[in-house]
Amino acid sequence: MGKLALGVAVGVAVATCAVAGVVVGRRLRSRRKWRRVVGVLRELEESCETPVGRLKQVVDAMAVEMHAGLASEGGSKLKMLLTFVDRLPNGSEIGTYYALDLGGTNFRVLRVQLGGTRSSILSKDVKRQRIPQHLMTSTSEDLFDFITSKLKQFVEQEETVSEAAQSRTRELGFTFSFPVKQISIRSGFLIRWTKGFAIEDMIGCEIIERLQAALMKKGLDMCATVLVNDTVGILALGHYYDADTVAAVKIGTGTNACYMERADAIIKCQGLLTSSGAMVVNMEWGNFWSSHLPRTTYDIEMDMESPNPNDQGFEKMISGMYLGDIFRRVLLRMCEESDVFGPVSSKLLIPFVLEMPLMAAMHEDDTPDLKVVAAILREKLEIQDVPLKARRLVVKVCDVVTRRAARLAAAGIVGILKKIGRDGTGGITGSRSRSDAKMRRTVVAVEGSLYTSYMMFREYLHEALNEILGEDVAQHVVLRTTEDGSCVGAALLAALHSSSSSSSEGLHRRR
Ligand code: ADP
Ligand code: MG
Image 1 (cartoon, protein in one colour):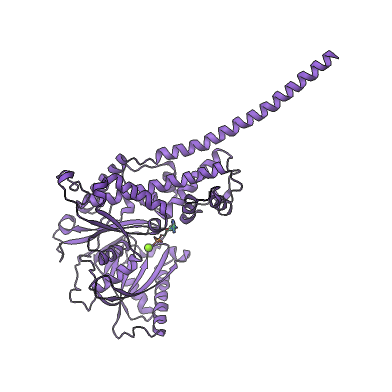
Image 2: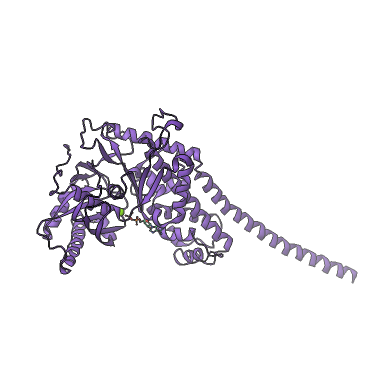
C-alpha cells in the first residue's frame, strides 16, 4: 500500500514536472522567438541610425557632389541638369495658360488664369488621374495619345462652358519629371526613365516634338512653350508667392530637388550667359549617393531586385514608392525568424504590396489597441490575429523606416543651403565663421504627399533640420508647402516665356 502510494506520488510528481517542463519549454521557446523578432528590430534600428553627426556628413557629401556635378558632365551621380530657366515668375504674369504634368502616380491637366498682380491666380482648374499601369511600359505613342486625349477632353469641356473663346494658340507648359537633357527651355531629350516607367522607344528622344506631334494628331491648336521638371514648377510657384524662395523639393512617389545657382558656378557649361546671372539647376537628387548614407540589407536587396540597380539610391531610401517595400521586407524577415505573426503570409512575398498611405496609416494609428494596424495586417497582408505587442513592433518598424527617410531628406535640403551659402556656415568653403555669416531669410518650397500628408514624416524632417542647422540659423529657413506647383508653376513659366511676351527668346545651346 505504502509502496503503491509512493509510486502514485512519484508518478504524479513526474507528470507535473513533465507538464511544467512543457509549459516552461514553450515559454522559453516563445521568449526566444520574441527575442528573435526584437533582434530583427534592433538590428534595423542600428543600421538606420541617423545621429546629427552622420547627417552633417551627408550634408557635406551632398554639397561636394553638387559641386562635382556642376564641374563636369558625369562628374557625380548628381546630374545637376541645366534647365535654361533663368528667371522665375514674380506675380506680374497675365493671361490664360495650360499645363500638363506627367511624372509620377498621377497625371494632371491644368488651366490657370493669371491676374497680373502678385499672387493673383484668378482661377485654377486641375484634372488629375492615375496613369494606367500598362501605359508606363508601353510605347511613347500610346502614352502621348493618352495624355493628349485627356487634354483634349479638358479643353472641350471648357469650350462647352464657353470659357475663353480664344483666337490665339493656347500655350502650355509641360512638366515631365524624369531626367532630361535640356538644350533650351522648350527642348529636351529623355536620358532615362525612373519611378517604374520603362518605354524603350522614348529614351534619347526629344520630348516636346513627341508632344507636339500628338497634339497635332488630336487636332489641338496648342503650343508647348516650356519643358520643365516638377521641382522647377514647384520653385516657380514658390517664387511667384515669395521672392525669397531659392530651392524646391519634391517628396512623393520619387524625390528630387532644384535650386537657383549662379551661372558662373555651372563650370561644365562655360560662358553660360543668362539674363539674371543665374539658372535653375535640376539636381536629380534621387540619384545622390554617399557612403555616409545608412544602408541596410533590406535596401541592398530591394536595390538588387529593382529594374535600376545602383541608381536612385537616395530616392530608394526616401520616397513613397519604396518605403512600403522596405517595411515589407523587414516584416517578412520577422515572420521568417519566428511565428509571432503566425505562418508567413504569401502576400508578404509580393514586392510593393504595401502602399505608402497604408504604412503611414499604421504608423499614425492612435487607437489604444492599434486597430488600424490590425486591420491593415489582416486585410492587406492577410496576417490574422496579431497580438498587441507584435502590432506595436509593426508601428516601430514604420517609425524607423520613415524617420530615417525624413532625416535624410532634411540633410539633403541643408546640403543645398550649404552649396549656396545659406546654411549659416559661409557655404561649402566654410570661409566665414558661423558667427559673422549673416543669415538671410531663405524659403524652400516643398511638395509631395510624404511631406504634405504624412505628419510624422514632416515632423521628423523639421526636427532634423533644426538639429543640423541649430535653432539660430533654422529660424531663418522656411519650408513652404505649395499646391500643384508642378503644374501651376509650369503654366506660370509658360506665361513668363510666352511667345506674346517680349523677352521670350531664351537661352539655348547645341546638343
Ligand atoms: P507624385 O506621384 O507626383 O509624386 P504625390 O506627391 O501625390 O505625387 O506622391 C504620391 C506618393 O505619396 C505615392 O507613393 C503615395 O503612395 C504616397 N502617399 C499618398 N498619400 C500618402 C499619405 N497620406 N501618407 C504617406 N504617403 C502618401
Ligand atoms: Mg508628379
